[in-house]
Length: 579
Image 1 (tube, rainbow, N blue to C red):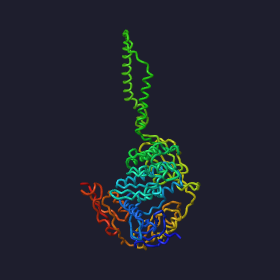
Image 2: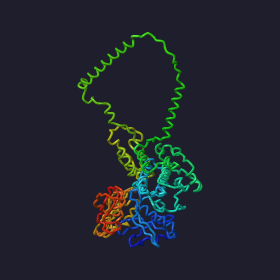
Image 3: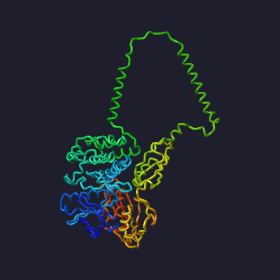
Image 4: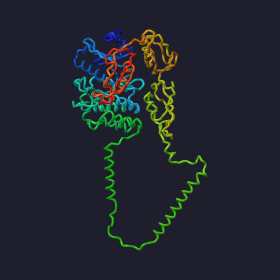
C-alpha cells in the first residue's frame, strides 16, 4: 500500500479534505483536496515525512510560498494558503488540470514551430511579471511548466527562486536547478539575474523545436561544463524547416555572456510576438549589417581597381555643331505637345469610357494584398493556436472525422486551401477561410450522463475516467452542499475525448466567508485577478495620491487584508496616482 494513501479522506486544519493523490516527487507529495470553506477543488502540496525536519527543505518550501504569494498572473500557478507546523507542512495552491510540458514533449517529440512560439510567449509573460516583482525563478525547465488541455501554460515550482531583499535558498545540489537547463553563470557559481531565466528558456525552446537538448553528456558535471564553454549546434542542422528568425531568438537567448543575451523578458517577448505575426521574419543583427558594410567596401575597392585610368591631359577644342541645339528645340516641342494631349485625355476620355472602367490602378493595388496559406496539417488545433491564426486574419472552419483513429485528438489531417496556395485579399478583411479536417482520435462519441444530484467529487472522477475535461462552477443553492445541480452540455449530448463538461455545484445557502487577500502593492489588474481567484467580488475603485505606493498600484483596500469577511462582500480598492 502506498504510505500516503492513509491521508486520503483526512481533513487538514478542519478545512482541506484530501480526496486523492495526484503525484509524488522527491521532496513532496501532491494531493487533490476540497476546500470546505470556499467550496472549491485545490491542490495540496505536502512535504514528505522523512524530510519535513530538514531545515534546507523547509526553507525551500517556505521560499516557494513567499515567491508565488507576491505574484498574480494567469500563467503562474496561484498559491492560496500555507501551513508550516511541526507535524504538518503544506502549501495549498490552484488545482491545475493538465500535464507537464516534459511529459507532452516526451510523447510528441519536436513541436510545430507555431505551438512552440505560443508556449514561449506564455512563459515569457509569466517571467515578465515575476521579474517585475524582483523574483528570478532559477529553475525554468519543462518539468516545471504545466500544459492545460486548452493550450494554456502555467509556470510552477518557485522553490529555489531568488526573492528581492530576502535571503534565498542556498545553492546546494537540490537548489541549483537542472544542469541541462541552467545558465553558464549558475553552473560556474557566479551572480545571476533575470537574464539567467532567459537562457534557461532558450534551452527549453531549443528542445521544443528540435526534440533534442543542446548539451548532453555522461555526467551532470560534463553537461555543466558544456553550458559554460560549448556553443550549441544551430537548430537548423537538426531540423531544416526551423524558421531563421526563431533560430536567431534561441541562439541569442543562449549566449554565454549575459550582456550579449536579451536583457529582459519584455525584449525577448517583443521578438517572439514579431515572429508570431510573421513566421518568416528574419531579424537584423549588428553582425549582419557590419558584414554587409564590409562587403560593399570591398566591392568598391575592386571596382576602382578594374576601372581604366583616366587621361588627365587637356583635350583639343573642336568646332561647335548646331545639331545639339536643333535636337533640344525639337524635344521641347514634342514635350509640350505630349502634355497637351494628356490634359485633353483627362478632360474628355472619362466621358467616353464606361463608368466601371474608370478607376485608379494605384488605389486598387493598395487595397489588396497577396497572402500564402500556412501549413496546418499535423498541428494540434488548440484554442491558443486558433487565436493566433485568427489574429492574422484567417477564419478556421472545423470538420471532425472519425476516419483517422491513428491520429491524435484535434490533430489537423487535411486543409483547404492547401499549404502555400496564394490568395489575393482586401486589406483589413479576413484573409481567407481555411477548412480543416480534425481527427477524433481512437475514441468514438459517448452520450453524457445525467450527473444532477451526484456528489461533485464522484461526478468529476467519473468524467475524468471517461477522458473528459471537467470544469466546476459553484453556486449558492438550497440543495445540499457539494451536490451537482446542473450539467453543461445537457445530459444525453454526444461528447468526445477531451471535451469540456461544466458541473454547476451547490455551495449551500449564501453564508460563506473567507480571509480577505492582501492586495496593497499589486497593480489594479493583478488585484482584480486575485480578488476573483479567492471568490470575492470587486467593489468601488478610486484613485488617490500616495507617497508610499507607486502610481498604478493598490495603496489601500477595504475590508483589510486577512480579515474574515462574507464572500458576498465586495472589496473596495484605492489606486495610487503617485506622490
